[in-house]
Length: 436
Image (cartoon, rainbow, N blue to C red; front, side):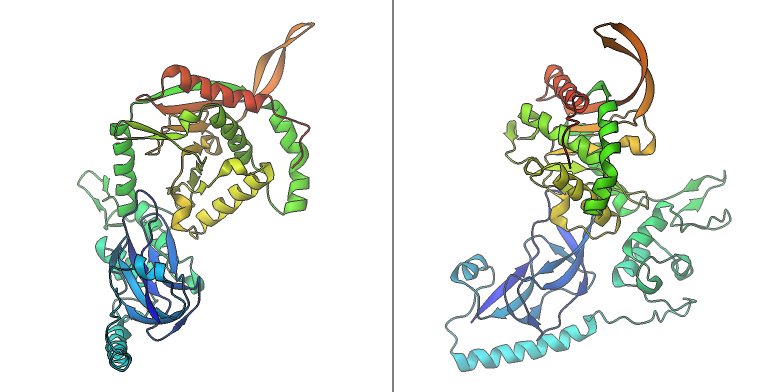
């Protein structure tokens, strides 16, 4: 018999805490291995925390809407399966082995009864909002109500938000979209909107929400930390385009997946990173850490206008089909807000496809603590000089611009330019005989 202390796991280098949004188990409930115990929300993603052992939940240390730091004990689970190592790992709350069995059982029963009394009020039982001013008496989760209170959103404004959750329930994404000026906004120049006000000149003044402030800080800090410099290369992707056109229908038929350009771009980036491993590194206290794993972050635009960067771990171990499936899976779950915290952390190099928005090129900001990021522009039909043994002629080719931002503290212009040129070469010399 032992006690397993369920702690908030590390969820990425930039995430130090999370908000408890829902308890999935009550005190006294049985718990299986890998069964989720609690739901949490960070500034980037919502997730759950599972148990590593089978047992009974005997204590809950946090209430809904409370902030939990990484490493803090969320709950305690009594288990027969716990190992000596796990007991050693959880010494922050040692087990009182010297208490005799009869006294121990009495103490534990009393503690469980007291905990039940204290936590009944915190059970996440859906109830209608009892606020008199709430016209539709919709249910709002504690997290949504907490955000509404912080951002000074009235009950009338809450009722006007279109919910994308089950039975029209307003989700965290819905209210954040409302705050950022998404489709939920109903503009009235005579009223305050989304926490903003209209000044005497008719200008709209909107306070940044928490997510916007985090992006603001992260991007500003990156510019302060790294000496950004850019190199640009044009790539002829006509053969790549034709190969995709030839294979996309079979891929859809065989895998029930769309074949987009993103995994094809990433496939070439991985090959170039093998040639220039210094781009797959980070800077730590005047030391360069060249990463063994190639973990590709892919910037993904969400429907509400926000941006998130899911990470393909060990991307160099995947073949082209595996990359295509991984890209689709992460993109879909990013837009459905079902990514796990570990799926947006530990990236070693980032790719962003600005061509999705019609941009010819871009100058992306490095995603710290990485040292490089590649922006891929829109594919355009352009007149080009084509060299042949019989002379040069003008033809229509499909081309794009690759924009490489890199950290000039450790990546000089020669290496940064050579890397992006190598990516272009891999795209231009695409193996059109390969299958997927």
